[in-house]
Image (cartoon, rainbow over all chains, first blue to last red; front, side, top):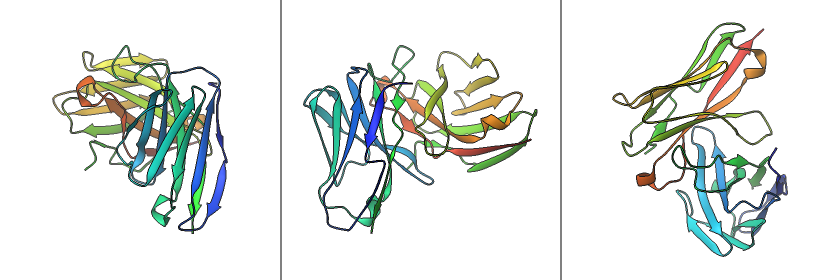
Length: 117
Length: 113
């Protein structure tokens, strides 16, 4: 199994509070991703990183920010959590871009279940 | 507007029979397709993939078929086993479609002993 951990694994918070989720990898992979999983929507990309301090937006980036100050850590921050951000959040890593037959497989962490009341 | 759709949210199959999971896409720029499998309380794991230059890829009990003209792919599991019970996500990507993976909504497969 790829060495990916997420913390916390579960969190309950209140609307309007800031929340930070952490993803840590031991594989030294260049690419890191944050997804959210919601019923009927599958996995949707929030933000991704292609190197230290290099990040870009995904499909559902509004209300989220990210930071990557070290290769192994990728943080997802909800500046002011809302109930619509209640979801399961997955971190993923890959050595290179996932696209195409020569692209790299994405490996996923175990997920963080976030509930915003 | 979802570019990758799995229209069956769930599927129930008897052990030993064939499971067929379907996926449709709308973006003609997609040229690489993948299936991921997810057990409860775990992250998705890669299962099998296919490039748009092929119409079939096989790996043991798992076969993925691609019909580009219909923008449709399917995953066949033969024979199905109880351990195959999971949620299956199809995903698509393309160098001209942003390179990132776009996932379908998932299909929950239940294989009954």
